[in-house]
Image 1: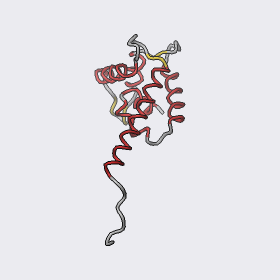
Image 2: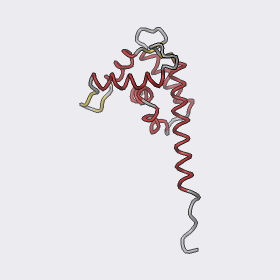
Image 3: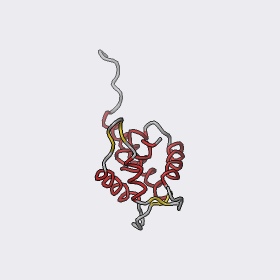
Image 4: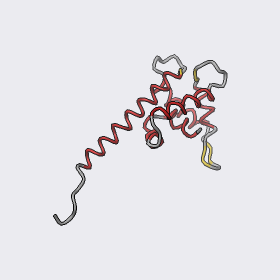
Length: 125
């Protein structure tokens, strides 16, 4: 679950593989729960500090994300999510980013299918 949050928080382009396995509704529900869990002071918004703290808890086994990279990832996410540039992200802003991520993923998938062209017929005919 936490991995899903980081993927959603970090950048839309990084979220596409995780989104392939979720519907929009299930992803939005998971993200809503994660958003509330990361809002440590329960004020209804995420700050860069809250996002950075969540990112720093991420890791793969022994490898953890260091302070510098966590700050960069938090900045990247804020650049995409903080629509009104007030230094905090509401759940509505975060959900809008998630929706845009789905849109981008679906567009990329459609473009790939179009590039592949129609399915080839049986060989030898």
